[in-house]
Length: 537
Image (cartoon, rainbow, N blue to C red):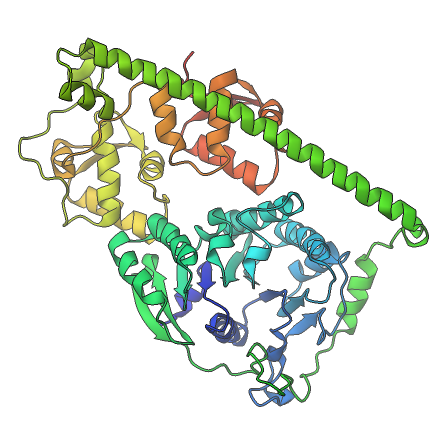
């Protein structure tokens, strides 16, 4: 069941070609448009124009949607129109399709989308459903050098766009090639038929961060057998997990696969008055420099300069990765030396030595002050606890009596510190007296430690603590930690240069934000300093 509440979520709609994902998305978009919502569809395939005609191709049954670009466009667009069009849309109540299928090459479409996404994010301040069909084109998991800027802008819209009114929907037939940092932000997943194990594993990563693992395993087993037009709707925040057969759409099905000899076309499209919009767009377009029109040699030289810049950026990024690897090697070596010292100091060898290696202990001088004794016979885990509650309690119990913020506990538990899944776990821990809160800090009670069962001992050395955090932090935060550990405090600009990155954009800002939110760095002016707990100095 797709409720109005779910339609206001960030959605990920995934499924193989022909599974019905675009069909299902169109039906939901029709409901939004009919309800007066602002909707913008980015269409790289030219398959959404059917919203302007009735199911039998009659223009009288179409919706009042303006089409920019494409073979059925009301107003043509070029790769230079992204910024101007975004500003117009941000200031208007248009329901529109931005069809980039005829803009030109893949590079031309990315140029358009980079300018469009950046300007729309800067200018929009009202609710806007931004539907990104074939989202992996705009936010790929492994971007080429000319794709990273666009990937960062889309990531910023998906992660931080809610406060600016954005409600992004991501549609893809290959979740395995969609940026996981983007896919993980979806509040609701609509999964249609998926036959590739890689794509099902990508959905598994979303389940790991948002939902219950056992339920996820059952869901993944069904995906390869789903019928066309049927999908599994999973919204942990609304406690929804069910199979849905999506109903027929109310407009023309321009995305269906034509059979031999058939042409997918409506009789005509419902008319829309676009004269004022065309005038606005023409007024905001920047004229192309005359030299670029006259001199092909200049264009070739510009392309060569762009190629050389790309090579230089790649070399800088490689140097940054080498620094990161060296820092990780240093941290690992130091951690191993500390563990071996504990083994040598242990009173017995053999099994006792193995136990020390697998379960680092605190120094004897303060071990009694920093760990609470676990009652004999404590269970390994408590099946009556919500999955998020179990994960949070395991982290808090392992760190007791140290105090964490809820954000830190969530990060170490592999959760997002928001949404229904996390909140349900936190509420159960509070209600059953398993945690104590003091201001922004929280820790496990004796009952919570006992309820957690057997948990891994918390690391004690800076190298071990860094490794623990880096295993849970999204990129580029682990690289930042490694560079700061190896080279000490530095300015934001120096840190970015060390990693071969630019200190701006969604990807970079996301890394800095997650470090600050978890108290792993302090930023004084422009100087970034690693937290003492993670620092060797």
